[in-house]
Length: 165
Image (cartoon, rainbow, N blue to C red; front, side):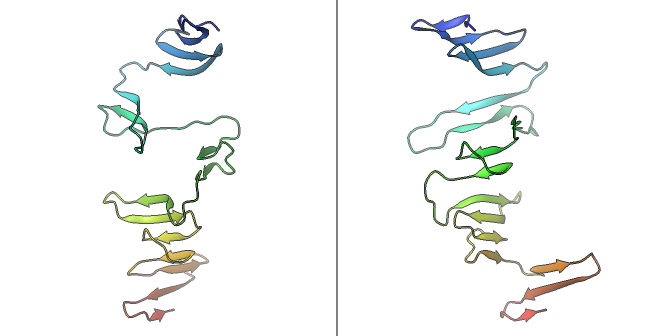
């Protein structure tokens, strides 16, 4: 594929218009990216570069206050962060040793930590810095094993450290 707008010293790299309201990027004669226009679009893809030591941002912008960003992988359907060979549908693999750094943090709308998964394998429920492989922090029932909604075993630790089974 020969791009309509090419770099002088590299004639098979550039941009072209594959069909109405589309813009494609070509590298090495192959289409590598395509941007599609949607009628009455109020949202757009945004990529922001950064200075050394700061994060590059990739997301959506626009006047719509409730816009989602969708990743649609092909093939195995796996998405990897920090890896080119994800082992699950969603894999996070740091490029460097992170110690107790959180790989995953789920927070509420008030930014309260609901779930943390650290690079060490420790999981925290209700806290951001688990000190055991499974650490649950809560002031009400902290653990429940259920057969169904009526038949279960639960435990709670109170403020003085006493367990109720």
